[in-house]
Length: 169
Image (cartoon, rainbow, N blue to C red; front, side):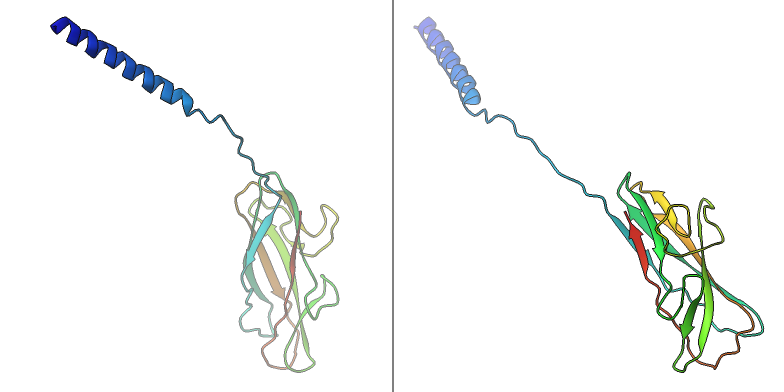
């Protein structure tokens, strides 16, 4: 009888193992693919370039930093327009409440020294007055330097301008 119990127990365990093996193979669902498409993109941020108080007897300078982050491998070009009151990117001007205009210039420089001291404009031709590069997925910092030349005896007041930055990619 003991042998029969052992045999019954062994058969029961074998049957249970067979059921478990069969149950596992019955739940096979196959495979599926996972896909995504990454589009080229760039994002920028820049803060105000504040010259502070201007004394016509001497030049005034200021700077700000432009940050651009583009997807890895994306070629880009960053330019800046003439502003609201300027007649050209080489003749930018700020305006106060009256009719007087206060001229200023913007030059660019990157942390690698490329374009250092060059006028910052919006020419779409490579190697001109823009900052050109290829995105790495990390932010690139570009220093924007401003200068107000001495000798501009305009009316006192708070002068300002708005410059639009464009990133072509």
